[in-house]
Every structure is written in C-alpha cells, then in structure tokens.
Length: 385
Image (cartoon, rainbow, N blue to C red; front, side, top):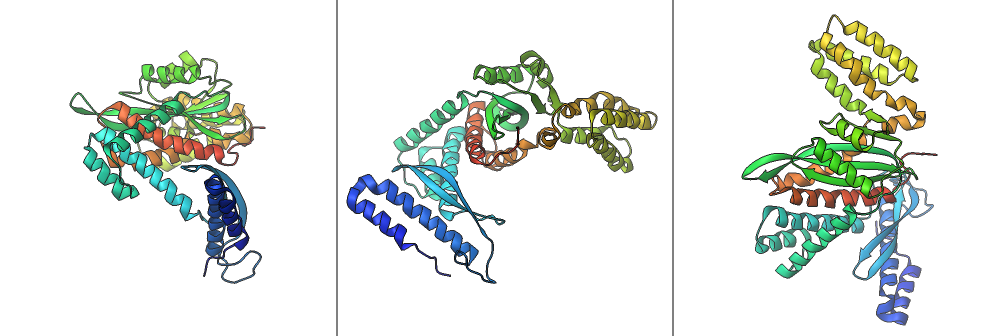
C-alpha cells in the first residue's frame, strides 16, 4: 500500500523555506516529520481515515505530544497513536535506538578503557558515525555533565516512594566484586512516576542507604506518605534514621518469595503461597490480621520456623491497609522497578564487568534518565485525588 501524502502540509513546508530560508528550516522539518509519521500510521492501519475495509489492522487513537532536541533546535512533534497495537513511528524508534547506542558506546569506552580507535569502530557500526578522538571525548563529557545535572536536580514533593537494589559486577583492587546499585522511584502529586536518583557502592549496608536517602532529602524530597521496598540489609535502619515518621510497606511480592525458604515440605509450597495471598487480599486490616493469626496457628506444629517468621514479616506487608483501596495494587509491591531492572540488565550485560563504581553509575544513570523522561510524558500512573 502506497503511503498517502498530504500535499497541503508539504506545500506549507516548502513555503516556509522559500520565505524564511534557514530561519524556517526547523518548523518546516517539524511539519514534514509530523506528516511522515501520520502517513506511516495510515500505512500501518492499511486504511485511509474513515475508510471501511476488511484489511483494517487497528484504529487511530489521536496524537501524543513529544519534544525532540535536534541540531535545528527543539521540535514539537505529534506522535500518532493507535488503539490496541504497538505501533510506533520508525523515525523516532530509529532515533532513540541510535541515541541509546551512542551513549552505550561512550560508556563502554569509559568503563572498559578501550582505545579511541576501537570506540570509533563501535560508533561506526552502531550509529553510522565517523568521529574523531576529540569528538568522542567531548561527547563523553557531555554525557557526564548531563547525568550530573540530572542527579543533582531539585525534587520537591512526592507522595509515594519505592526503593530497590540490584547488583553489578565491578573490578576493584584486582578483584571482581558485586556492587549495589540503589534506585529510588517516586509518584508525584500529579500521580506520575519518576526516578529520583541512583547510587552505586560496594554494598547495600546501612551507611550506603543512609547516604543515598540523605542525598534525596538534601535535594528537597518531602511530603512522603509511604515508602515501599524489600527488607534489604541495612535499609530498615537507614529509614529509621532518615525518615523515622514515614510508614514503611514491605514488598508483598518479595515476601511471597522469602516465605518459600521456610517451607520444609515441597508439596506445601503452593498451599503456603495461597495462604499468604489470602492475607494480602483481605478487605481490611482487621480481616488480614485475623487470617494471619489463623495461618500462624495452622503451621506452628507442622513448620515452626515458618510460623515464627510470619508473625513479624507478614505484619510488615500489611501497612498498605492504612491507604486508599484504589492505591493498594500499585503500592503494595516494588514492581515499579521491574521494567527498569530489565532495561538495566539488558544494557549492562554487554559491559559485563565495570572497572569502577563511577563507570557503572554513569551507564545506569543514562538508562534511568531516559526512562524517567518517558514516564513524566506518560499518562497518570496513579490517581492520587
């Protein structure tokens, strides 16, 4: 199917260039890109607007605004949306991939200490770019400056905060050691997701967590109603020191996983999982407490370690009952971090072993910056009104 072209839009772009010369170039390119994306959606749908056809693949669903920084300046784009499919304009997809690949290649240069010649080869292969050593160094500095600016930006009020930790291999003193990558997520007063900060250090002990949380406070983080996380080593002590009055919700998903370590009979694992899920799915706190008490009594003789663990651990997963019903599904786990972890894992797998914590933080920072920008342009994640 041939791609339809709106001659009115094309004529407008040509007129801008003819009348304003280079001054009108940015607006003309903006018009052409918007028209090309609209035409690509039409080709994807396999029908013209308002056309009835058995060949139709999906339905148009308006446009989404997006600001794109280019050498011509900032372009205001109208990205076409579809109702059900995963359509996305190939122009933007290609641009984002190239940008990510460039950042990754520059990060690889920094973290692996590869020569300029090797870096240039990587850039040519991934991005089709030919760059000099000076340009590579300049680009690396721009990336560092961008991350530093993002990492120290002011935060403000966030109603809900999620904390998560993962590990990356880092070479230190001739040894390869797992370093903790701490990430903080937030839901702001508009109900949108954001990534608040990143920190990389040798371990996730109390000192590391406390320093990380204090850095978030120093950047103006306030107004927190609830913090959700797993029971990371040192995290609970750091929370008591930095946010002593903020309620804490232990991630229910991780609680389900943790419980399996105390189930001594394999054929009982599913039963225990269902019992814990029933507690979490109770209508209110009183009913959850009642179900917890019954479950503890049921396993006191059969699996004493499990019963003893549940008395304290499961209670830490019931804080959510003090919050609105409509918020519980989003707040009772730290699953907000799952997609981010997948992206980090996909990219850091290429590097494998980082030469120092700073290089790891740089690459992870580039990844979460992109995701954070996308989240803030998305629709509301949680209705907080």
